[in-house]
Amino acid sequence: MTGSGGAWEALVPAERLRRLNIDARGAHVDVHGWSTAAVHVLARRRSGEPFDPAGVHVRRSPGRVYVEVERGRWPFSPGDLELLISAPQDAEVTIDQSNGGVHVTGMQGRLSIDAQSGPVRVTGGESVNVDTAGGPVEVRHVHGRVYIDTAGGGVFVEDAGGPVVVDTAAGPVRAVGIMGSLRIDTGTGSVYVERARGDIMIDTGHGDVRLVDIFSPRIYVDAGGGNTTGEFAVLENGYYRFESTSGEIRLYLPAGSSCEIAAETGHGTVRSNLPLRVHLQRPHQLRGILGSGRAVVRIESARGDIVLGQRREAGAARSEDIAEANRGHRRRQAELAILQLVAEGKAEPEEAVRLLTALEDDHTGKG
Image (cartoon, rainbow, N blue to C red; front, side, top):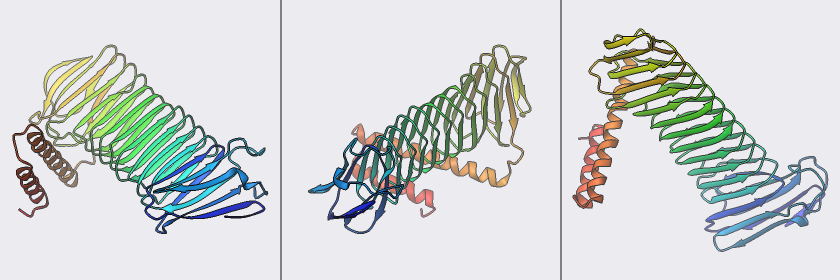
C-alpha cells in the first residue's frame, strides 16, 4: 500500500476471488474487470488535491476482498474522493454507496449496487441489481436478469437477456434490445421500448408509452393519462392488451397479421383502416377479425381516442421476422411442456433430454 499527496493505492492478491465488497459512502466508485488474479485500488481526490488516506481500508478473507471508506472522514464534498478499482472479471461485486456515482465495466459476474444518489452506469455482467434513491441509471450488455428500483431519475437498459424489471417513482424509461420478459412500473414519466422479444408489462400513472419493433407473445400496457403508440408483430396465439384513462391509443400492425380485435372507449372515438371482417362498429366501439384471428388484441380507454392502422414498411423481410418469432415462441412453449412433464413425474429426465435435443435439432435444421 502506497500513497503520496493526492493519491493512494493498494494491490491485493485475489486467487479464486468470489466476491468483491465495496462500502464507499461518500466516494465515486469506478470498477473495471481484468484478467489478473488481484484487486488494485487507487484512491484519489478528483480535484487533485492531497488527502489523508487513513480512512480507506482494504482487507481480504478467503474468496473475498473488502474495500471500505470511512463515512465523514474528510471535510471535502461527497464524490470528490474517487475509488478506481480493477478486479478479476468473473467475481461477484457488491457496492454500497451514498454519494458520487458508480461506474462498472468489464465484469462478468453478478452485480449488486445500492446507491443513495449520483449516476449509476453498468456495462456487462451476468446479472445486475440496482437500488437507488435518485440519479440516472444506465445498464448495457447484461447476459441475464436486470432489476432496477429508483425513486427518481431516468433509466436506460440496452441489450439484456432478461428478465428485466424497472420500478421508478418518476423519470423516463428506455429499454432497447430486451430478449427476455420486460416489466416497467413508473409513477410518472415516458416509456420507450424497442426491439423486445419477451413478454411485456408496462404500468405508468402518467406518461406516454411508445413500442417500436416488438416481437412479443404477450403485451400489457396501462398508460394512465398518457398516450400510447405501438408498432408490434402479432404472433400466433399472442395476447395484447392496451388500456388508458384519458390518453390516445394508436396501434400499427404489419400486413398479414392474424388476430381478433376488440376496441372500446367511453368518451372518445375508434378509427381503423385495417382490413377487418367487422362484427360490430360504432363510434365508440369496434370488433372484428384479421386473417384467421389466431391472436387477441384488446384496447380500452375511458376518455381517449383509439386509432388502428397498418404499418407501411411491412414486407417480405418483415414476414420472415414474424415467422421466425413464431417458431421461437412455439419452441419455448414445447420446452416448457417437456419440463412440466418431468416435474409432474410423467417423463424421465433422460427422455426429456432426448426431446429437448430433438427440438434443438429441428430449430437449427439439423434434424
